[in-house]
Each structure stands twice: as structure tokens, then as C-alpha cells.
Image (cartoon, rainbow, N blue to C red; front, side, top):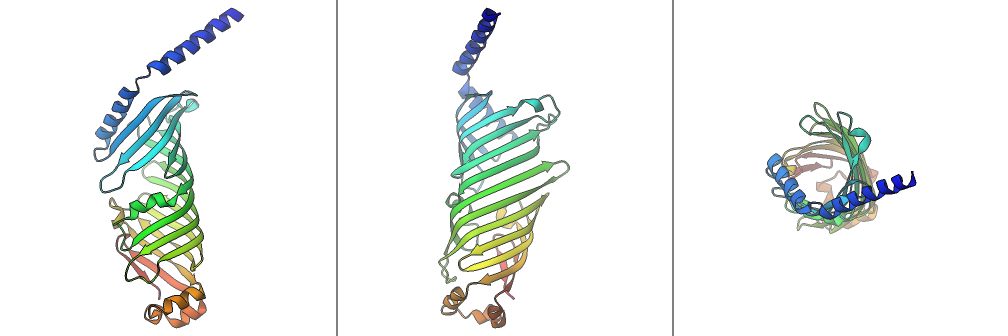
Length: 287
């Protein structure tokens, strides 16, 4: 009995060793890149270091994803592990871990055998470096912005006839740098920013945004209707802002605030805010 067990263990270990040693990494990279190019022609994928991982799975040292008119997205130390109990169902799944935007992301994805399209996604991101997101805003907003700070988030999506789900974003230690000759503010700082959203198709309902800042606090809610071009996405957000009195005084020394905001509202503190238009050309009203 012991000999049989040892022989079986030796055979299994040898099999795994040779599979590991002879794994066709370059062939797998080329196959995945070609399949992605065939399925999504306007997306370019480059892989580095594809190989087996223990427990049974796949590891990728690096991935670069290029989209039209967007900066490339790079991920490192990717690990894919099948959810073995789901492989006998009609919706097999896999787990994924990776380093992305200076932080860590974990996700579970379920797909349909028919068409191999994703059916549900559950994911979390931790310790994202917000400065790595600044290039994605460059040239797409009416003002030049830079970001710093850390972010966390979660996302739950399902897809039947349309995509539905919920998400949450939590930011901390945020600094927004503003470079615009018209705006007399060089930066805004926030201790925390929390946003909760609901997803239905292309429409994101912003159920709550709470901003705790040095210069201004805010409570917002509204909708964002996504477009193929992110800057064309339509926004409709309402809420109130509560500027710090010292910040208001500093602004008053530079611009005539009475032309923008009713002085009575400034004294009261809570100022109505409405943002409409598109992400590329938003219209802001403080009345």
C-alpha cells in the first residue's frame, strides 16, 4: 500500500514537473493575443511570461492593454485560477489576482459556455495610486487635472439582457491639482471621498457622493449615461457644496464671487450645485 502511494505520488510529481518545464509559454502568449485581436479588433494585448501556477492555474508576469485614443493599461503578477466546482455547471468561473495602478485587484468571473461571454463579475481593488490615473484625464476634460492619493473600491455586475450591478469607491488623502489660467485655484485637498453607484445598462445612477475636504465639503447624487467616447458621456448631478469660509475669502480676493454665487447663499453656507452636459464639456450652476 505504501509503495503504491509512493509510486503514485512520484508519477504525479513527475507529470507536474514536466508540464511546468515544457509548458508552451510563447505559444500561449501568441494564442491569447491573436484570439483577443480577432474578438476585439480595436484592442491590442501584449503578454509577457505566461506559465503554469500552483495550485493549478495560469500566471502572467506582465500584460499591456492598448485602447484607441487612450493611454496603455499595464498589469503585473497576474494569476488566474479556475473555480473547479463551477466547471461542471453551465457558468464556469475563475478567480484573478493582479497588480494594477499601483495597487491590488481581485476578481471572480463567471462565463457562459454559449458564446463564452461573461455572465457575472465580482471584484475589489485596494491601495490604488491615484496619480497613475492622471494620464487618462489628460486632454479629455476642459481643465488640466492631476491626482494623488489612494483608492479602494468594489464592483458587482451581472449580465442577462443588460448589465446591472452596484459599486462603491472610497478615496483617501486626495489632492486634485488644477492648471488653468481662468480658475484661481491651484489645488483642492480632500480627506475622503465616498461614492456609491448602481449600474443598469449604460446608465450609472450615483446614489450618493460624500466629499470631506479642506476647502469644500459636498453631498451629491445624479446620473451618468456612458457613451462609446468617455468625454461624450452625459452627466446630470445635483447636490450642495459647503465651502470653507477662509477658502471663500481667498477666492473673493481673486474673482468677483457675487457674479457666480448669490451672496446670501455664501453666508448660509450650503450652495446648490448642478452639473449637466458631458464629461468633456460640463456645465456647472451654483444658483
